[in-house]
Image (cartoon, rainbow over all chains, first blue to last red; front, side):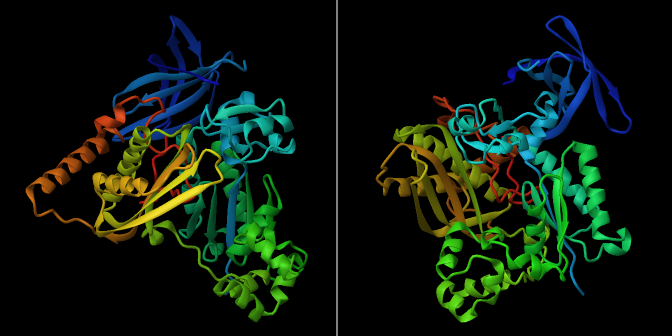
Amino acid sequence: MPTRIQENIRVAVIHGPGRSLRPVWFDWKSRKHTVTAISYHWQQKSGEKLLLHYAVSTGSALYELVYSVTEQLWMLESVDAEKY
Amino acid sequence: MERIIMHLDMNAFFASVEQQSNPELQGKPIAVIGAAKRTIITTASYEARACGVKTGMNVWEARQHCPELILVVGNNRKYTWTSAQIMQLMLQFTPLVEVFSIDEAFLDLSGSLALYGSAEQIAALLKAAIRERFGLTCSIGIAPNKLLAKLASEMQKPDGLTVISAGKKAAILEQLPVKDLCGVGSKTARQLSLLGISTCGELGRFPLEILRRRFGIVGANLSRMGRGEDDSPVTPSAADDRVKSVGHSMTLETDISERREILRFLLQLSEMVGRRARRYNVGGRCITLSIRYADFDTWVGKQETLDRPVNQSGDIYRAAVAILDSLELQQPVRLLGIRLSSLQYGEKQLPLFAQERKQVQLVGAMDEVNDRFGDFAITYGSLLQGGTQTGMGSRVISPAWRPAGISNVDVG
């Protein structure tokens, strides 16, 4: 089961082509985690807030990153290291 | 002109989305459950189904069939967003798309063949687009009507494509069990078997008068279904947006029996129903309270008709509490539901008296805040007390869920 983290984090992102975003790496717990694959992407509206969710793998764990388009903030939603 | 109808059914939808989200789950027996504390299987992957795991089983029973079963707590937002995107893909091929449930839809392709050549070609393009974009598979049925298209999509799973042409229909239906038809439940199938009918062929040939006497108006429908006839149109959601009721129910994380706790959930449900009714400017005169007990088999449902249509959460709550007070609860409660029906559209009248007018304005202001910051951003203080259950709002995708309009419910 994933563990909920909900921490704002620093993320390196490739914008484009078009309106797409691709997280490349992120800092968490004073470590740089390189994204090896984006396995799924979905969106959610919360009031007027648009949230973009990314299920990403680093090879050693699965993370859910969330970008708030309205607030321009990245958050680490959860981590699932159990099966890795 | 013969119609060309397609039925598309996503394969093990929730489980497949989870397997795509987490590559470690691919090829493994997994089951999606509603919440960590509840134990009913919502959907199982094909690997789990091969071991005998089925939707509706409890986890203990499922583990008896499949000890290595991996449980995943479902993420409704992921499923509703994916479903809405897939429905958008379908609209590229025809405007006549009827969303049947979160993972099923009918498409009327009769007017699209000139552009795409054949229904099989459209099926191949749709399958490829869904696979490329989401990594998911679906089963597709193509036939002259909805009944047969749905039947066809059930014939090859997963990732199937089955065509039932008008010429092949009689041969397929002759030996097909009646219970395989969409709309014939186990109760109807039992009643038909008492008449000596077990296959569609037998149903289609059975004297209509006897079916009418036994089943009333449904008898004629059953006879037509036995012959594979169905002239119901594919109705796009926009044309069918006038719903007959607005309702919400919630299965609680733990069974409850304390009145104070029950009232808290009734207030939450009243707010969910009222907010959706106000958003679409409808009011209803009939309030129904549904309760399911801890044994999950016993239902209590009671309704109250008011003297005027309401959509204010407070009015709905008071009516629901009045119904609750007229009941004697037999067991702890597992599920609560409130439904508003006898709807009137365009319901907006400012009350005559100042106190009531203030109340309406207050609710209007709360709605505006919640529209901006999300549901329950501002709510009743009593909903925030002793919150041992998880977050507020809808946690279940109902069969009536639609990607847009009044039937669209933001599920958590």
